[in-house]
Length: 375
Image (cartoon, one colour):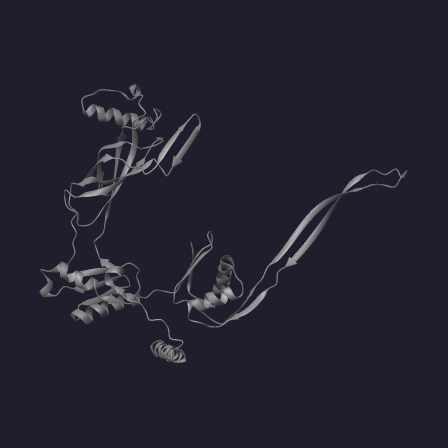
């Protein structure tokens, strides 16, 4: 038994010494690299927004009321296209709802491809459940039609009630139709211009743009030039002129260590605090405590002595109570580790909402070296 304990002890000490040699005390965590694909994209490759106005039919009395003139007029115009002449005043149906149809047209889609659509009620319809969207042209910002939508509407909820009592789940006035629109026109995307490709950074940064350029140049030779914090221009080698997709794919897989400014995000409504790993503070003293003042008022009856001729009156008495919680004063040492900042603030018993006030005061004092953003 003792022999087994000695063996386990030796193995444990060996493991500890190995870990200390690999991760020395006080060593900062290594920066994590990511692909260029995850922090930048080819300039010009983007989606386009589409919008259209249409009608949803087949609703079980949950459509727009006759007070919605635009809906009644739309029904009349639609029927006139089929040779049926009806005026808006003659329509009494509540089975139709006017809707706005929206969609995202992804890049590189071709004519005949399908995209998802979202249908939103425009009038006073109570629910789009069970309805069918009639053929609706979808236009881009330039006014041209790029897709046509039609199909059954899926709301993912319901609305039911009678006699003033109603139950509702989710939002039945908004629905979706997967693959509900057919693309009618291709969108031209120009990847290269004058023998170059430009990559746009998701978060513009001088250091990150420089590192992307260095990664590309170290792999392909001197091809990349950072034009500004958000753009890196890459010359296309002759060998890749006819293999542009492979060239872009090879660049996107290159590893890069992105750099970001130190930032602290605060949500005062929920008490949420998010700090980046590069947040630093100078040495500073922090006191955390509270002073509460309570003022209460009570009423007593003042009774005059017998045969004095005085009157009985009500006399208010005001009582002031002052309570001061025990304050904690602690010196936060200068540190470059966000974990040390959090541990130090937790050590003085600060709650998340109190930490928000402390961080704001530290920023005002110039001790917090980070951008403080309140959302």
